[in-house]
Length: 151
Image (cartoon, rainbow, N blue to C red; front, side, top):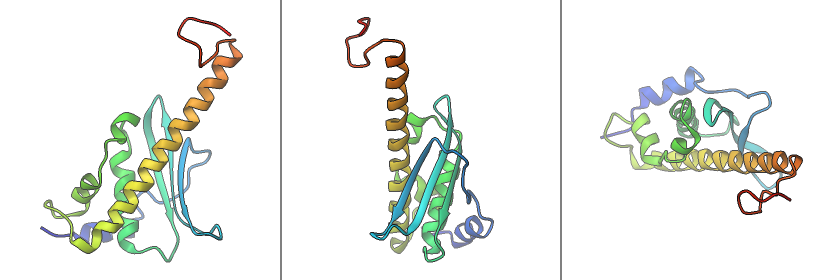
């Protein structure tokens, strides 16, 4: 009933899920007031399936946060967007623990990773809806009109 430090260190030292994605379909950024980025999560999505998830962490980011972000990239990859939205902190905890939960001091890192994931998925949804609206408008269909009515 504890954090599996070997698993967490392996995720970080092997740089699991680390890196940037060229032209991501979704991203989430945690930064301070001056614009300095501490965490970035990016995803490539194809046909509503998360094909790739990567993160970048500033050198000052706690190793527990980096491990939680690495776990998020692994858990989300290959999942449908709707399924990925159901990923909870408990799912990330399970990935980082010895199978029965995390130590209390590691839970804030998991909560931060879950927030980053859900913000990234929300940003994907907003971008998808904006592009859908543009496509419909090009076809002369009002995206706000009742189904079947044209602009």
